[in-house]
Every structure is written in C-alpha cells, then in structure tokens.
Length: 439
Ligand code: ADP
Ligand code: ASP
Ligand code: MG
Image (cartoon, rainbow, N blue to C red):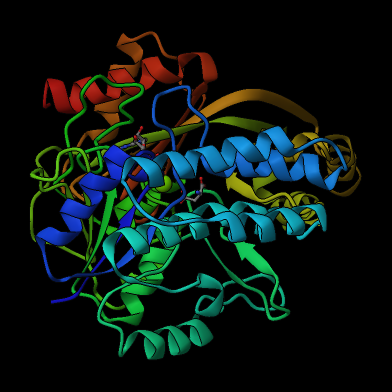
C-alpha cells in the first residue's frame, strides 16, 4: 500500500503542527511520499509565508528596503526549527534566495521558496530524502503543466526511493526558471505525485474534517460529506469551495486513485472520500453548496432574437475578442444574459458593449453588477423531483430575489444568481431546507 500525503499551510504553520504531522506520517508505514505547503496561518489574522514572500520580493525587485520583511520570513522558519530542537541552518538557502530576489528572479520563484524551504525542514525532521520539485515537475513553453514529461521523470525518480518529501506548488519551465501553479496549488502537486507512484490513496490533510456541505465561514458547523464524486467536487471547488484546488482531481481521476480529505487536528476523523463513482447514496438530496461573488450580468434584448440566425454568435464573439470567458448564459425568446467575472469584464466593458451594438444591433443592453452565483450540487438531484422548487421556495421564504437560474445539462447542479447582499442569507436558506430540515 502506498499513500501520498499532502499537508496544507495551516498543518505546517508551527512546531506544534509539525509534531502532529510527524505523528500522522509515522502512524502508517504506507505514508511514503509527503508533499508540504509553505507555513500558513497560525491564528486567524496571521500572514501566510507565501504572502510574506510576494511582499518581500516586490520590495526587493523595486529596489526598496526589503531587509525587515526578509527577517520576518526567516523568523518563521527558525521558530519552527528551534522549537523542534533541530540542528539545521538555512542560512545558505536564504543567501541564495536574497540574491535571486535582488536579481529579480520572478514572483513565482519568490513564492516557491515557501514550500521549498518547508520541504527541507520537514525532510530533515522526518529523516526523509528531499527532492526539489524543480527537478521533477515540469511546465511547457506556454506555461502549461507538462503531464507526460513530469510523469516519466517523477515516477522514474521515485521508483527507487522508499520515502521522500517533495515540496508542493511549483516546478520548472523548459528554460529552468521556476513557475508555480495558481494559489492553493500544492494540492495539485500531491495529485501529480500520487499518479506517478500509482498510489492507493492520496491523502490531503488540512484544518477541517473533510469536505463540508457548505463553507464553514458561512454556516456554523456544517456537516461533513462522507463520499463525493470527482464531478461533484469539481463543481463545488470551481464555485468557491476552496478546500481542494479545482485542478487537483485531474491527475488522479483517470487512474482511479481516491482522494481522502483529512484533518491534521483531528486525525481520528475519517474525513471525505473523493471517488470516480459510488453506489453510496448521499445522506441528503444535495451533496453540497458553494458560491462566489463578483459577477456581472450583461442582459441583451432584441425583438425576435430567437429567429435571428447567428445572433448569439455575434454577441459572444465580442467577449471572445477581448479574452473574457463566459460563466453562464441563460436565455429567453427575446433576451439573453451573459454572466462574466466583474473584474475581468470591467476593464474591457465599453469596448465590448460598443462591439455588440455594432455587430448584433440589439434593442437594449442592460448591465447588472455585484451578482453572486451559488451552485447547489448533488448526484442525488437527478432522481428527486422538485429539487428546484424546494430551492426557490426556501429562497422566497428568506426574501431572497433570484436573478438567474441555470441547470446544468447533467442535472448535477443548479446555479442561482442573487445579489451579493443576499449571498450568505441564500446559502443559509438552502442549507436549512435540505440539511437542517432534511426535506
Ligand atoms: P490548506 O492550507 O490545508 O490547503 P485551505 O485553506 O486551502 O487549507 O482549505 C481549507 C479551508 O477551506 C477550510 O479551513 C475552510 O475554511 C475552507 N472551506 C471553504 N469551503 C469549504 C467546504 N465546503 N468544506 C470545507 N472547508 C471549506
Ligand atoms: N503556499 C501556496 C499558497 O498559499 C500553495 C498552497 O498552499 O497550496 O497558495
Ligand atoms: Mg489549500
């Protein structure tokens, strides 16, 4: 049995957390390949080392005084090293890092040092071999993850190493510069390593006891989802349930390797199993709820729109021209709405509107900002009648005005758009009707 175990930032934020992590690893011999994040928050308004590194790099690259900022980063590591009673100096590493910051080695290089250094500390603490991710995780010339080359090199490298620590979040470009995944990307590294060693399970250790039905920052003590499919998880992760990076399922998905989300602070909890498919019936009609703020709806009206060939295409072309991706597109006979990310769209707004007017000649275009989208996801919804009805009556009872509805063709999810003001209220109402009341 081989397990790849990834520990998130809060699991490795202090010496106390390091001890818990070591206990977890040592508890099972199969926990052979360890993927650490950079030290995260020790308390709620603490700063993650990754963010400290971005800040320090930005000062150094601008030629400003970065010394105090660098000292604070060093302190984070030395606090852990000293409190664990380790005999390890990172001075040489810090010297190289400082020179690279001043020499403008790039923001990605800077951020990657968080996991790189933490990997060195953890490998030393465990007595495991340290493998620099830059030697085994690769991107192509366009900056896309190079699956083939990585899998070849990484599986070969790990084939004769019994136990190793491979830092998360980064890899190397063909020209040997460092590139990171997007934020939270250590989850992706863990998945890549799991695929390379053909792991039996990929354990992702964090600070909650699994994937919860809703965001614990919105719902008090939400219930844990025991089993969730990759598809459901992807919908939820994409819509803001950030427990696991939305891309983390791809490497393991085709290999049939389940992901097990576990809690470093409560290792006895079994957490959530993320699987390809399951015969396990979900406890509730819905599996989970997630949502995101920051959307704009571009509402377009034109009489007889439905009979005008190519109208949609002409509208969408304008968004494509300016590189704006479209989130949802509910439509009526004479109306269509295009939902886009507010920030992205805002920068190109006038050009796009002018383009639509010029190309598609609509009667009116109306813009509505500050919209939040909420995804209600569940493999059980297909078999249940009236799910949408229950959602809307719950929202109506809570006095939430629904701006938009979209049901995915797989019947795996229903998306509702509400004003940002109603966001938390709407999630609470939906959670209550399906989970608390269990309708
Ligand atoms: P790590 O540092 O271990 O990678 P993250 O902060 O990336 O951890 O992810 C865990 C956090 O995700 C939790 O502390 C929680 O606040 C947040 N979260 C948001 N939605 C959910 C959800 N549906 N289930 C569990 N956690 C969630
Ligand atoms: N340390 C990185 C971040 O803060 C990557 C990760 O934690 O997964 O985003
Ligand atoms: Mg994370």
